[in-house]
Amino acid sequence: MVLSIILAVMTASAGAKPLSSNGNVLEGLLRREAKSCDGSAKQSCEDGKTGGTCCFEAPGGLLMQTQFWDTNPVTGPDDSWTIHGLWPDNCDGTFSSNCDPDRAYNNIASLLSDAGANSTLSFMKDYWQDINGDDESFWEHEWGKHGTCMSTFEADCFPGSKGAEAVAFFETTVSLFKNLTTYDFLKDAGIEPSSSKTYSYSEIKSALSNAAGGVDVQVSCEGSQLNSVAYYFNIIGSPVNGNWVPVDALDSGSCPSKVSYTPKSGQRSSARSIEAASKRTAQRRATVV
Image 1 (cartoon, helix red, strand yellow):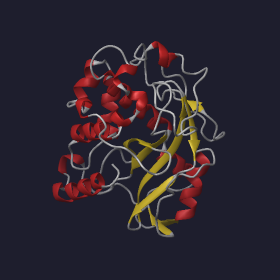
Image 2 (spheres, rainbow, N blue to C red; image 1 turned 45 degrees about the horizontal axis):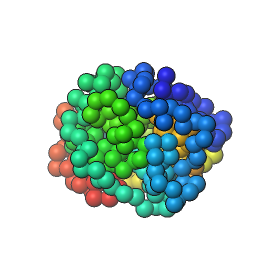
Image 3 (cartoon, rainbow, N blue to C red; image 1 turned 135 degrees about the horizontal axis):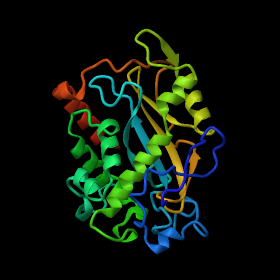
Image 4 (cartoon, rainbow, N blue to C red; image 1 turned 45 degrees about the vertical axis):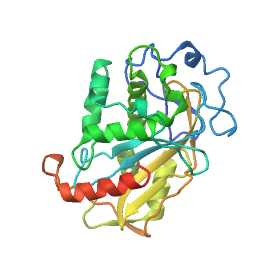
């Protein structure tokens, strides 16, 4: 398997771990150089002056896996957070975006289907949803804005058909998300969605930090409502088959001292409030989405 085994035991330590496999779709996608990354690969963010390669993520070597808890309009299952994206940060709070318009692919669903990544596509339809109901545009946006800026997902890192690097990006993001089960992390600490109960910001932060191996996890709110989290990593080698190293969040997030974590009781995607969803989509994409 190209995707070896990652983050299965994040609670054990904050050490480097490989990703659990998302299937064998990525088998053979990495070229020879990427497959031999493990032996001599450096940890990202170690040398800001070194150019990025298929085996060294730079300059965006601080990777963020971002997630949403959307309650109105509702996205995703009632008992799970949803994927926002995988973002490369330049190790200092700055970031590049929309780095290669020629690879800002349209029809991500077809790319995945044509590559045989149907299980990943099916998962994305449930867990990587746009609040405006336009999932395809959301996926295209995340790849075009963030994926094209990752040196380890350059086209020449992957042989074969056009768009293979985008397929690898989505496969990798989904595999990472499956290991970062925020809903379960909070539930295990006695923190569950409630229409009446509130939780302290500190206990939410503590629960996620404990689950993430002791590192700080970014936790953010919209008003007093818990809304998003971000897990930060450095990477040794390629994100596809390298080791992920949990690190402290560069931005710890912001919430009031008492936080509402309400159930997903709003409208579903088939009946979303288009006006409200469009407004929130515009707000998100005007910042770092």
